[in-house]
Image (cartoon, rainbow, N blue to C red; front, side, top):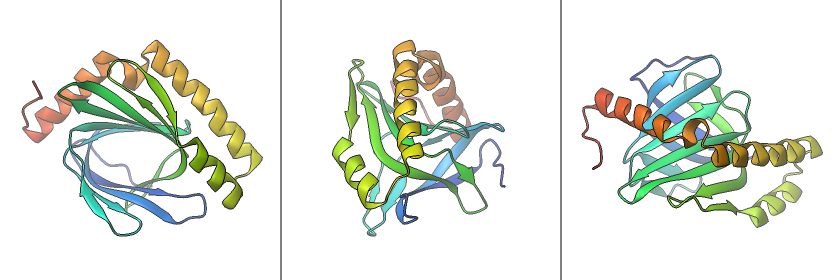
Length: 181
């Protein structure tokens, strides 16, 4: 297993349950790595969809991946405030090629005003049937939705203002960028 160091860039790849490539993000800067998690940041990063379409992210985003939780968290830092996009996904693995995980369709979006929305329930149900998600995974994902909502409500970890300030400031230091005002 590859352990990237602070300041190194990694690629992130998400797959679907059937093993097909879903999406690839280039050049996320690693801010912290441990045996359990990786915190990274990207800004105006190239994203390639499975069908070959390409686009570039619009703002800095802190990325939180964990070895035990079945979700990852994208903290989008915008002029109008911080919002979050939380993917229900397998714990990550990392190798020489990329940080990798399986995307399980369900997402929670948290808006700057604190509003929360569970997204893509229909897509989840369709893929659950089509790709034959095991009952165990269905149960794990539903339990992790509860954990994620608890973290959001308690402003735990990536959902705390201090976390966002600390890691965005570190990204700005390492990349010699000026923070958003």
